Length: 300
Image (cartoon, rainbow, N blue to C red):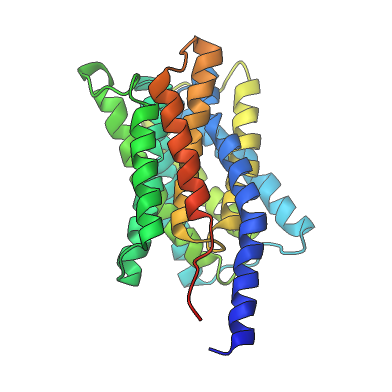
């Protein structure tokens, strides 16, 4: 590779980091409050997921049009991929929202964001290579930090076991959803991609909510609207904007910001105070994000 081309690649990588990292941080901050909004909703948990999607979908299509990238007609193969991604996202939301109602907020956010590790592992498997030394250190620090951060609240007890499994299942399906979204982003802008995938999730969530007999229409719309606006439009919008632009390791590890924020919400809303292990875990995750955000230093 010519030196000029190599310099262009490095500058492009640095630009993605400069804009991608703040977008990811904001996305995860918005998504982190989702479990709190689900708890506050007076519908069933899957019904809350349905409204999150149903309210957001029309606005996402309008945003796509306003950004000059309207959602065009889909071909058969593209439609199939979007339908599959919508189904994966619907299962992810249904499992996660059910898990939130059956376990602690900290458990739900930590296990629901197992994508932090599954997505980098998937990327390494596809690339058929091992992580670099720095990436391995970052993943190890993040794993230890996540365990420490949730150590006091994490418990695989009979009371929480079903909720923990549901949240872990949600993390698996969210990883599959993001992989498909990364493929779709290669031929379409982020907003139409998110708009189509969101719309495809609506009917599966409605059928699931009705099948389990949940209350569908809320009396208090505030947490439902907040869930649609912050989690789906802003949070997922920024997430889809960034996917494919930065390394899967950095992308995945930023998901650990969500359980960190959830711990803070638990502190202020439910008086779940930080202990020494929580602070050490927060510092380790911060170090992991700093390490993995550094561009690779390759010898000339």
